[in-house]
Length: 194
Image (cartoon, rainbow, N blue to C red; front, side):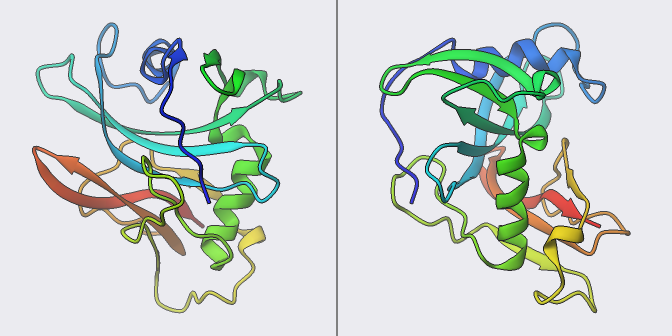
């Protein structure tokens, strides 16, 4: 299960995400984002090499805050061929230099998301070591059971999750995550499979 280190990162996750977000076509803000973490969860790498975190943040810079889902993978070495997914590097106070990627472009992230869909992986708490996150769930549309081949599903990150939101009309299944919005706990789809 995930080991969460109480340490520093330089630059911080918020700094890396804030520099990366405006370069994305789905960025809906103006200027430099001011980020607040609202929630999320983690997944474990069975090999213990890649950290995976699913972060729901609010950009509070606009008059009307914008919510984003940014899944990250943390690696101890550069991932060849994934330059387009690299947010940057950060010095971790315990683990040393980390290469931080948009999870959607990381094959270990993809494998573990499919394992979550298949019921072969469990979501971990975002901030507490060795603790499951029971509020993360996989929801399926009618006729799509757990026995279907998860490896054949297209995985799409929902970049603008909505409280109570489900996968799109064409989704076979989706992962719902908890976060806090306007001081209240909510849940919504953050990844879908089609």
